[in-house]
Length: 128
Image (cartoon, rainbow, N blue to C red):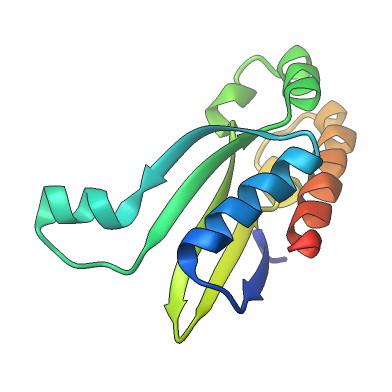
């Protein structure tokens, strides 16, 4: 089982980030955090790494449902979505598969919530 949902776009990195945020928004996700890995690795290790961002996406209604069922599920929130420059005008977008993540949590009440979130993330990725 893959632990992610992904697609490759024929577009530049910055456009891919904006398109990804818009697609997530269309499915009810907000981006709570944005980590620029390229920038952080340069600052902390003085290394050059490809353009790579981690977007922390949250679907509030489903996050609330999950928190009601499992009080420590916040350790797995928000859903991470990455955007990385592959070079030659190609950019990859990948999102965590919440169903795969939930395998580690022994709570059957989370399964339908994870399926719903996965469906929304798949729709967002497919819309790109």
